[in-house]
Length: 278
Length: 285
Figure 1: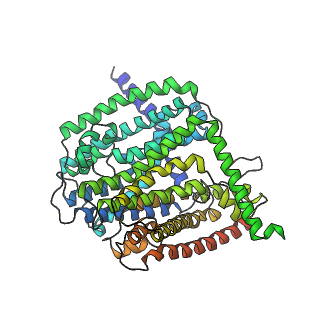
Figure 2 (figure 1 turned 45 degrees about the vertical axis):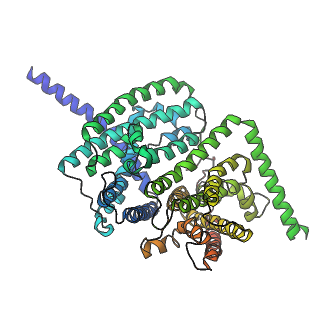
Figure 3 (figure 1 turned 180 degrees about the vertical axis):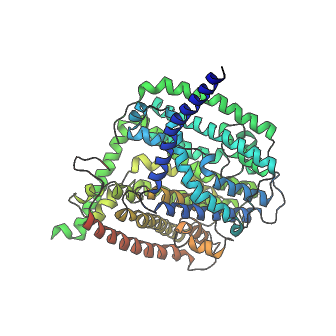
C-alpha cells in the first residue's frame, strides 16, 4: 500500500512537472521575446518613471498643508501611488488576447495542447517577470530619491496585500476573458472594446486616483464594482486604509462570480470566432 | 512647371483631402453601427481621460494655483489637441513607428506623390472623428462662459495659434520617437503607442509647483507641458508675461525642425537598408 501511494506521489510530481513545464516555457519565451530585439524597451521604463514623478508631485501640490483627507494622509497617498506603479501590471492584468483576436492567431492558439487561459496567463507572467526586474524593483530602490516610504502599514497589511493581489489577478484575468468574449459576441473591432475598457478601468479601479478621494461620495459607489477589486482593494489593504473584512470577501465574491461568467461567455461565443490573419 | 507651382500644390492638397474625406464619409455611411460604437468609444475615452484630473479639482476646489474652471479649460484644450491629430492625421504621423516597423512605409514611398503631401493628407478622417470634439468643446465652453477669460478676436487668434502649435509639438515628438523604427524596426514598431499614451496622460496636469528638473523635462525631452499646461497658462493670463503666448508657437518651430532632421536621417538609413520585415513570400518576420 505504501509503495502504491509513493508511486502515485511520484507520478503526480512528474505529471505536474510536465504540465507546468509548458507554461514555464511559454512564460520564458514571452520574457525573452520582450527583451531580445534591442534595448529600446528601456525607453518605455524611462517614460513611466517620468509619469511616476509627475503623479507624486501632483499629490504633493494637491495635499500640501492639508491634514488627512478621507482617512488618507499625504504620506499614505504617496505610498499608494508608488505601489500602484510598482505593481501596475499585476493590478490591471492584461494578456495578449486582444492581439490574438485581432491578428487571427487565436485560431492557432486553440490548436495548442494547452489550456487557453493558461497560455495567455503564462505569457503575461513572462512579461511581468521582466517588468518586475527592470522597472518595479528599481522603482522601489528609488523610493528614497522620491521621498516616499514604500513600506506597508504593517506585517498584517503586507500579508493581506499578498492575498488581495492574487485575487486581483484572478478578477483581472476573468475580466480579460469576459471582454474578449464580448468582442467576439459583438463581432466588432477589438480596439473599440479595448479602448473603452482601458479608459473605464483606469478611472474605476482606483489605480491613479484613490477612490476615497473622489468627490460627491462617488468612491463609495465605485468600490462595489469589480474594477475596484483590481487596484483599489489591494492598495487600500497595503496602506491600511480599508477594512479587510469587507474588502477581501467582496474581492473573492467577484472572482467566484466572474470566472463562471467568463467560461460561459467563452463557450457561448467561441463558434463565432473567425481568424482572418493580421 | 505646373506640377511644382504653389497653385498646383494647393489644388492637389485640396483634391487629396476631398478624396480622403469622401472615403471617410463612405465608410461612415456604410457601417452605421461601427460608427456609432467608435464614436461612443471616443467620447467615453475622452471623458474618462480627463475625469481623474477634473474630479480631483472638484474635490479640492482646484489644483495648486489653478481654480476648477481654469483646470476645466486646460483639460478642454488638452482634449482638443488630442483630437485634432485624429481628424487630420488618423493613424499616420502620430503612429509612424508602426508604418516603418512593419515595412508598410514602402506602400507610401511607391505612391506618385511627395512624401510630405501623403503624410499631410492620407489620415484625413473628418466625419468619423468629428463627434469626438464635443467633450473638448464642452470643456472649453463652460469655463469661458463663466468668465474665466474674456474672449476677443485677438484672444481667439492666439488660442488657434497655440492649439496648432501644440498639435505640431505632439506630432513632432511622435515623429522623432517613431523614427527610431528606421534603425530598430521590430523593437520600435509599437514605440509610438507608448509615447503617445504617455503624452496623453502627462498633459492632463498643471505643472506649477513641480521641481525645476521635472518641469524642464516636460517642456523639452517629453514636451507634454506644451500640450495643455503652458499654453493654457498663457491664454488664461496665469502667466503674466506678455511673451508667454508666443512660447508654444516658437517651441513648435524648434520641434518641427528637429523632427524633420531626425526623420530625414532615418529615411537615409531606410534608403540603405530597406525593410527587413518581409520575407520573399510576403509574410512579416
